[in-house]
Length: 308
Image 1 (cartoon, rainbow, N blue to C red):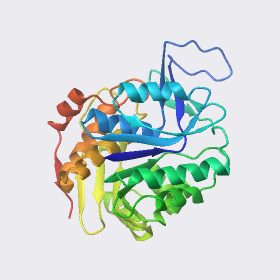
Image 2 (cartoon, rainbow, N blue to C red):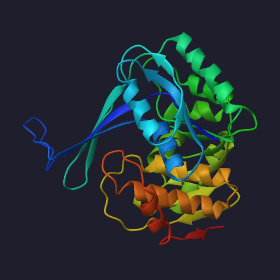
Image 3 (cartoon, helix red, strand yellow):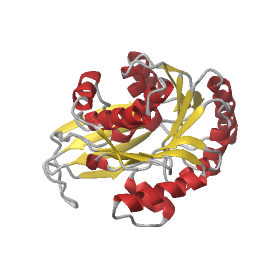
Image 4 (cartoon, rainbow, N blue to C red):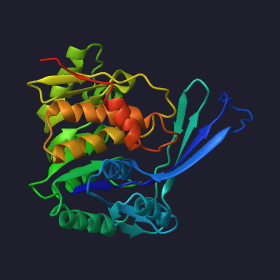
């Protein structure tokens, strides 16, 4: 079973318009609303690839049932720690140049009692898991140290995959991780270094390995991705596709990597499938994840290169 832990679910509202005109009237061409959150996207991606998927995390009374309905429709088993209030709403504004402006809410506060309940629930659920993914931001008022506490709660035999940023990533790595997936901006933010070339990027990945990660899956957007354990490194270039929305591409990568890791596939296959899923995800509107047929189509077009 692949367990996905979502600390901060979100209603994602993707708005498409011709040109974003600040300080003046804008008219919407299209709007897509999805009930998601990074780890919930991962859980759906796992299910679409045929994996045994289970989702947990914080959920909120006022609109939480919509998230549960979405997961049920995708055949994702789920149980949550429920709190008062509603899940945050994030806005993604996309114009005709494929430029995206994001406006993210912080989310409702979660009490210390509810935080403790999720820790206990993760301890229990992880006993039946082989992979556990923790990804996304934290609700308002929850300290970064909670990421480490949450990661520590996972059963020792489980391979942990972390996808977050900033102090949350730093704290999570203190508990160790089998795999961490930053994008280039997140890597540069955590290390405080700007990277221009592949060799420099791999050195940046080694910083995360020294901090507690066994492997780093570095997303380079439309250029592809690098997978390294510091001793060896692989690169896979993305296929050229029509980009609809880049939101959720990283979640697709984590979903595919998780399934391949659970299946005991090679590092080359883990990277190839991750890039295929991430690339397929950008062809769908809003935060909708990849579909299996598009994933397979892109998988057949790409190949992995050994860097060293």
